[in-house]
Image 1 (cartoon, protein in one colour):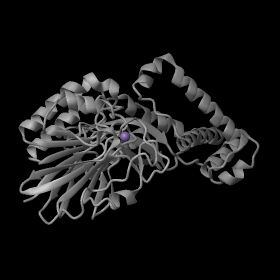
Image 2 (cartoon, protein in one colour):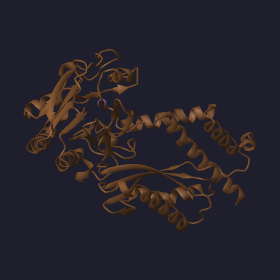
Image 3 (tube, protein in one colour):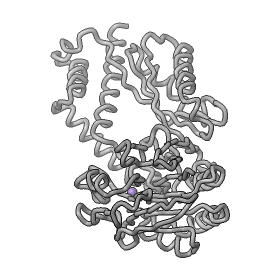
Image 4 (cartoon, helix red, strand yellow):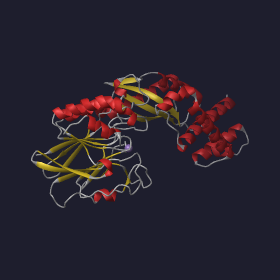
Length: 430
Ligand SMILES: [Mn+2]
């Protein structure tokens, strides 16, 4: 008979998704916790594995206590065994929550940073679990002992649970070498910490990150949801991802070359959105909010007009609806080309247009010029002062201000240079 297991991690109970209406229940990870519990019960799973960062932080204790307690008791009634390990965010609070919601069917493995084995019988099979929990917020290289299955060749199915940063040597969050996992005598590793779903090793053992079940920001684009495993008596593992996240982030590129009017622009844009919705069709059933980052590509003489036409999109709650999914636009990014025949020649001119052309070329080629460096420096100053602004403090405290990477800053700057240059050229040619 087969064993059915639901795997998830990095729920961050207590957090809400960015760029969606904050008063809607679907914005909150608590919503997804309830869906996970329902799914485990509806799919009649034998085990529900949670590999760390289930709770966002210690200060989420009171917020998490009731939903956790309710969920765990529903799982208990349904006869589901829950096995967890804690991660860097919930190393302390998960221990306390599990103690307070005391149940003999809820197990937090490997407390105090020691590997803990636990055997459980189901459907005539014995399954040996092996888990390790974060003892503190930071765990550096070498601080975790390598996992070793107890006793050789029991013939039982062995499953490892671990939170950590596989393959990132200098990580503060338990850097683990994949070799350590492959050598542990375990048939299957369920990992936590990385929010993007990822399979690191296909079989013998299967090693994977189920990823977070609830997308929290545009950085977590793509499908998110738990993984359902069916393991038959001969150890064949069938793996199925359930796209459960009520929020989905995607980026969409729209080529606006040759779009001459606002009407044509709208048509091009809505077509692109529809095409993307068609592609995602099978994964939208549970999605309440599909949040797009739109990148405009191609070349266009009236860059400023174009960005004006695009501006209205980000101001409304939704631009389209597909089934239950409301489609919104969080941001429109310009990656338009300069509409100049010979940028190289123009860049030699000591004119405003020449300086802009030179800057665009430098930014494209990842080079720096005094002018580009000065603009980047100004940008840093402005961004820094924004961080201190009183109006943004609530966002900052909610952890919703995302800092821009070097690449992003350069790309933004290039967008501005192109916009200016195109405007200059248009005025010159008018
Ligand atoms: Mn983590």
